[in-house]
Length: 164
Image 1: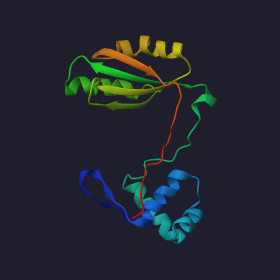
Image 2: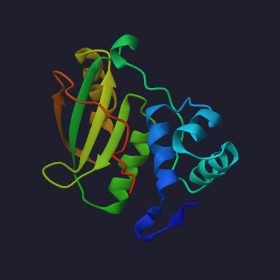
Image 3: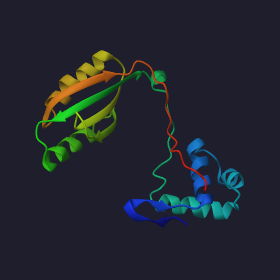
């Protein structure tokens, strides 16, 4: 079963790594299919999956949707600089951004910008509305630089786990 390590990591054995690799490739596997694929009995496999869920290693199971097929084909990276560098201003911005459905990812970063957003939007004009109606009025922002993705070269959701 997963053993906690330092810095929030969890010690995983080869079976648990195989389970995670298989579920990252196809989370719709039945427990029996998964057990067979990783070389465990169904009951042992089920216990390990439950332990991985309880340890917070498996966060959730999702469907990956093609954004262009649902009208959200514009991917924009917004580099945001905060006016003040304080815990309070960072917390206020983080709280306000969590409720924005078009923001797919948000990172506090080092470098020229303080925050990096990945935004999914149907069009350039929709992104402009997002900026005008929300970002320009969000608390504590001094600068926004936007980069539109021209073409996606690689998209991967599976972490590069290795089986020892």
